[in-house]
Image (cartoon, rainbow, N blue to C red; front, side):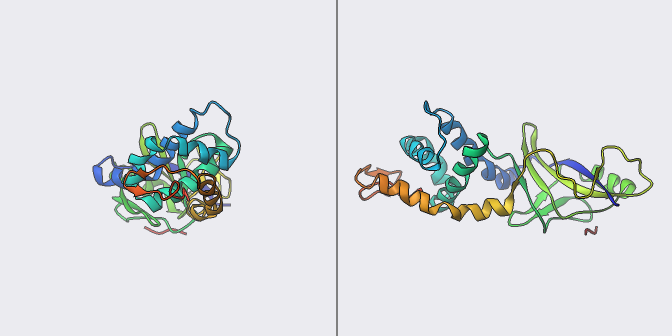
Length: 224
């Protein structure tokens, strides 16, 4: 049975890289901070969304900067996740389609494209001496020290079996599937419509340039 080593690789902190990755996690962090201020324990998706509506002014700057439609979909996704986990998303897993440039200068993630590594030469040296290939199933992590990519490598048989997990063993840390994350953007549209109907008799006027007629906008090298 092949042995797999999961290598944690620090990503570049240049502005181009950060501008790609920060939006993936920023809105979720802001939403988590707001939901945590509720005096009542929020256990239902609709209740959480109703509470967010009472704090719409705190959300507007982020909603506008992300684009209204994208932000509304992200709220749909995140609220359900927060209800179950009580924390912001910090780990996104990619089930397939990931890649590494042969010189290790960058990795490629589906729908995100190329992301530069902080220390390509160190990864290249390890790869040449320890690993046969990688599995295209990466995990993107928003850590206190910056963004990290976790890559599973198939270990050469001559390498000592330390810090190695068997192929097929899951990471004990909690990941959110990136594909599920994207699919979930659409799943809760009905709940958003229910929230909008709850406020259909309230005129909040103009919200950050969006006129709300009779209510708020709907929160409505190789691999194998």
